[in-house]
Image (cartoon, rainbow, N blue to C red; front, side, top):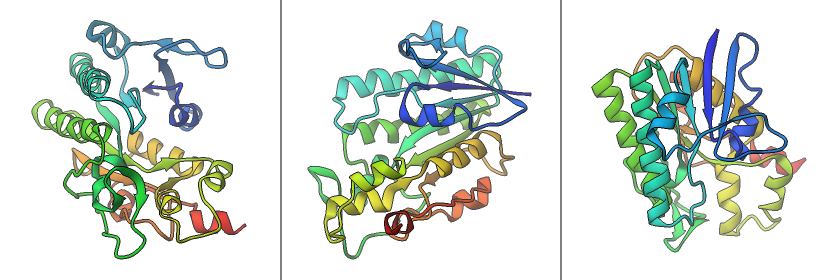
Length: 258
């Protein structure tokens, strides 16, 4: 039985993953605060001793915990995202955890196709650049900077300590109703393009994280894009499919046409 620690389990992605691993895998959710509808262990990732104690006995850590808004200020992303991720990595090494799946973000490379540097979720409509999994960091916010820095940190721990590391540059997790709310009928609107290109559906979110945690890896560390098979995606999925066996099912254009 694979024991999986899920930090940040109270967030949208974390909740989607609670039942994503199936039989034969024990998932323990960790949250920063109590939730009436979620039975979880409390964990403050900014406390290194608490993290070391909490992550004892696990095979895999799926690390989602952190400040998740692109508008998060500098001090918060340094304290919670960067230092918190280092504490998780230190705990993984100390406790013999085999693999860390790090929730990176499209915002780590968001400046490649932003239509307005001051509005990172407005994408260009024409001549958008293809963003491969090996694209160099080009963050669009302090939040994106923190994710890019954490990718470097996880890669360092993989090389220095032999951790298996998968960095997932996650798109925009939305259920179908929320996807429709964030897109309009006028396909020329740049604010709609972001949702249609970056959509990560609930099904595909579960699939890519499960495989990031459990698939046999031919290489480590790896940084991979995590979006659905959207017609308007600019982030390549070839590497994710090859390395993890990811099989994206959903497409924003098809969903919006229903």
